[in-house]
Length: 264
Ligand SMILES: Nc1ncnc2c1ncn2[C@@H]1O[C@H](COP(=O)(O)OP(=O)(O)OP(=O)(O)O)[C@@H](O)[C@H]1O
Image (cartoon, rainbow, N blue to C red; front, side, top):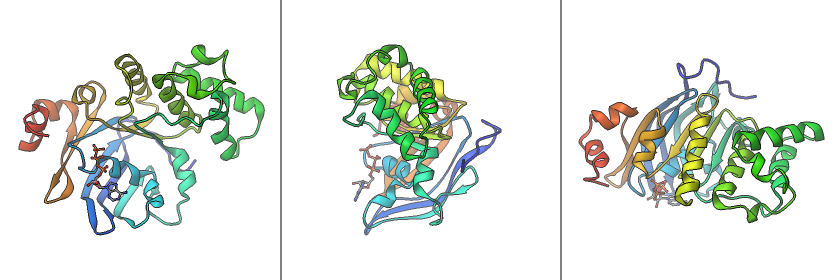
């Protein structure tokens, strides 16, 4: 294990310092200083194009895969300096999982979706795989729904079930943190509610950062909220704070305008 989230909720687990990301000449966001305590949920909100997805992508170094993408500043997750080139990005991504807006199961059976990442990370013992698959599917409330069809295609599941499978797939790798990029926005309202409840249930055990355009959702599930905004063509962190503070007594006029729907 490369990160350690003991002392949950009282200790900073994810922290960025002066984090800046450029795609070629274009600065997506600049100088973001943000922290999340272990076991908490941070919601990233803000209008389209302000850099929320780009920020998330830095945290498990998905940005390594984007040509001409430069990330400067510092990211600490547990005791790991994420931007240190010596850090193994594959091992980091096992500890810091990512869930995307559109569920992305492999076009394989439910079982294979769960098994493949485990094998890729060196887990080959059949009994251990069986145990992890069952526990992870139980954790996301999917086990009873799929236990009799584990060897049928994951693509036959509903959108909400597919998203829960993707979360189970990430949980199987025993991550410390999960990054969720609008995980409910492609789902119907009922599935969205189920996935939202699931995310809430993961608080404490995991540190979570969720990008959402749904302010009511941020208010329901987040411990902390961060508002990004494009200023001078560059994404900036306008304000971050505890969810009650952001919604009840925002410090910045843009935050006040955003949460009342007057801007954004
Ligand atoms: N691969 C890329 N190459 C060049 N520019 C990019 C790339 N990805 C994002 N951008 C630009 O970076 C800025 C921030 O984009 P990003 O997707 O991070 O914003 P966002 O807040 O997540 O938006 P949305 O809410 O619409 O998903 C935008 O101006 C976008 O056009």
